[in-house]
Length: 579
Image (cartoon, rainbow, N blue to C red; front, side, top):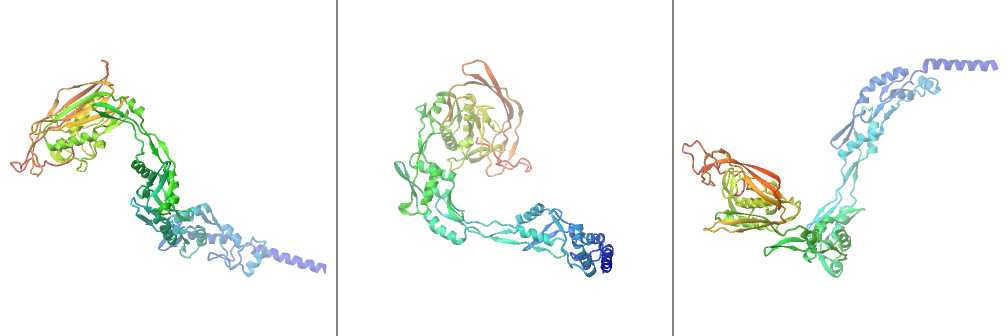
């Protein structure tokens, strides 16, 4: 019996060894991977077939679709790859000595075996996020803003959308090596935190009452009204913690508070220096009442949803000091005339208007040490609304008409007063041709906004600019006066070269409506010098040179040339300054 049992065991083991030897290296029959039949093949043969059959699919982009858009993901960039060896080993159930494997080879194994795929999840997530960036749409939360008159502008809520990135990642892995077409991208709707019903409720319960009237501010010792005009432009209703709540722009509210303090006469006032009865006088600084915009916003917010007498907020105040103190104004040392200059102009009503208006706007300007004066910034654009009228200007080397004609007389006179006060020349431009009522080589033209007169106060003292005109009459010249008040710091003398490099004028013919006849004269070059000496000293500190080239003033004849071929043109307005 024992011999019989032993013989049977030896036979079974022998048969198993024979099966393992001849069948163990083969893949179970009927096995398929991604539609590729590898059943009955050896491991090496199965790997070769999978590599051959699935190579194209392994490198093929994976497509995701949403609505009418298609997005491609490169497997290499997404870190996705096909592990052929692991897939065959999986299909072989662990190798030739596994009894289950031998049974599968003889009788058939699993029909379909999923391929083993490796993935760099971080790289795949980056590719999904790239697509999501194109598809995602942030939900629009409602918002309400208000105009200075209390009218409201409403942004209504809108639904957004967002890619389900986890589902998209699974879909990409599922579609890898598949012969099927694109897969759908999973996109979810994203609802705003506040819907239209909640918006409508906020408009009724908060927006309407907020604009119903002023909020009374209870200050220490007095009560004032913060009007809708003062606070409305700074107020918005925005979503916070799932509901529409009031929010103030503190910077914008501060402007409304400035208007409020201005109405009640509580603004701090800087000290300054003015001329009274031909003497500089320091106007002392004045402290004012200040309100903290953030504190006002916090106090006013609870009252916005109320009406009538309940619209009250209690707010503290503090004393606001001027930015420029009385002591600082006195330290400017503005006490005497340090330079003066006068130019003369022939009678023309536009000159009286334009020179007088420009002088009025400049008069009283105070330059602290380090300040730069700009005529264009101080005077502004020369328009009818700004008090100017039409007069002659120089344009393209000839005279033409425009607003502000004559203002260059103000620029020239101001430039010379600054020149002899020892102020630093920052920007000035001479006229294109010489005008004999101005100092040769020492004059300036201006044009809005391109040509400016600028000089900087580089002295340690303040400078007060005084300007006025004595109007011209049909029988007398007008006078343009500028005086600089300060502490005398420089003694300035001027010099000049002779005129040289003369150029001859040309003759222009013009039939344009705005042609103005003119007798021309030559152009030339000239150098002007400015000598700096400390006040009271004979020692020359430095010498500056200014070079000027004047073009010739062309003769302008207002009709067609005799031969009908020469001249022409003229009258064009291409820029220039007031003459």
